Length: 397
Image (cartoon, rainbow, N blue to C red; front, side, top):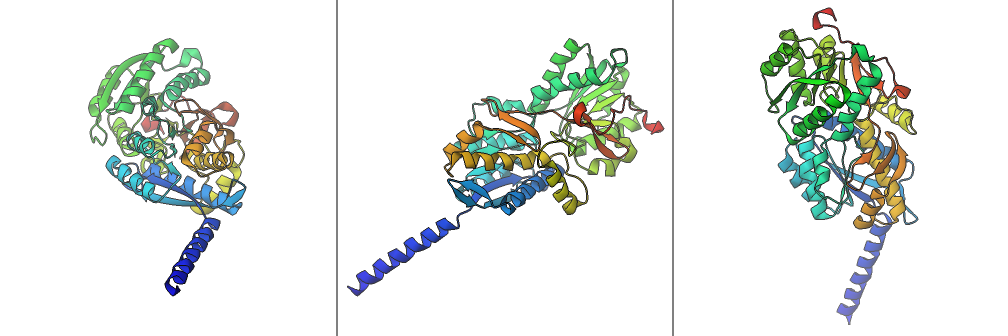
């Protein structure tokens, strides 16, 4: 009898303990971000956006789920810019019971991650990647409030046509394409749209990520009389390309490098040579949307500057998750997935809705480095500076 009483008491205590834990339950979210390796500069921005968003949401009382306020518990792991480690870290987070994944930076890392999210049936929100091909694999749990290749290639020529008078447009274009699936995708998009807008691709070449010598690409583009370079290098590759363009006296009127010029190290490393380069990182701190002022203030206190480009889209991922959790009224992953798919809200990056393939209907931003600062030049309604065109030769800056 005594043993039965002790067993019964143990069961009651266990139930009480379970109930108590349930009362203090948190929303477990896992993020895998490149904090070291080739994408570290981009990953640092993504990490900052996630962490500021969690701080803001928790400070405001947390997220209402089924009538109960819950705090977000974020576990962030470094994949070292290695897709194999991305997969391993995500599997680790799954065993810890996360209800949602947040992604890192770089298309190959997201490509590896997205299939794991579907396998584990855990909703995955990722930014800092434009590769559309990932979304064409029938993945149900992948969502990205970030411009994709079709958006970027289309907006490239919309912007150039709107910003430059017809008689002054740099019609001869060179493509410097990274030898990756995303590089092929962007190259195909630019090529198909160039002719429709009256531009001619006069040189096109590929390079392996991490290359040290881009002279062949540069000299061929120079010989062809290219006035514009369209490219999508990583920050290290992009900085090397600019240095070698200067060394080889290749001066163009427009240089669009998509992601290379995203981090502050771009200007720190290149100084005036890094000016006039365009980028499209998905956001700018001058966007006039709710919560942007609060985000900039927090970033200013933390890093002594307004929010970096990838901080906004990363912050928006948490806004979307919080909104979806409230509408789902549960931590059930499948119901959360459906709520994310039904998103229709305004975030710090503007209005966001998701297409059936998980791509976001979002605004495309173009920034340009001018006098050592990233200025917003497109869309016009938010512009902080006039588009610097044409770019002066390197020796006249």
